[in-house]
Length: 129
Image (cartoon, rainbow, N blue to C red):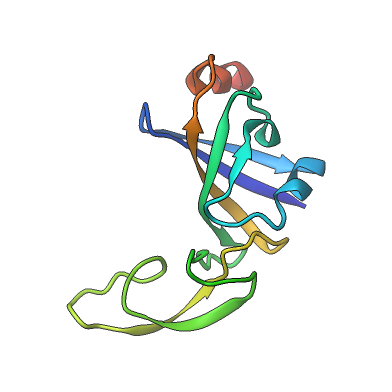
């Protein structure tokens, strides 16, 4: 099992991708949107902390923070994650996924809440070489 973790850095405005598999991927299962995780899960130094902000499953359905559980459901949405109405009052039934990470999730979006001593730019530059 593997997850693609997107790490957004609010200081620089850049995003970095990291594939997480094996034991570290298992540590992510059961976490929810809003949980803070250690940077060691995605091979960052231990002084980094990441907050889970969302994700998508293998079919592209987004995780919605107000939907409990891991199941995929079709909800009547008037806005927010999964639907952007084109006009006021528009509602539409869309498929979305719950806020808990399961084995069906493919991509996990995170944002750095606690930066480490080494900038992310240098960490990912070293790994590319």
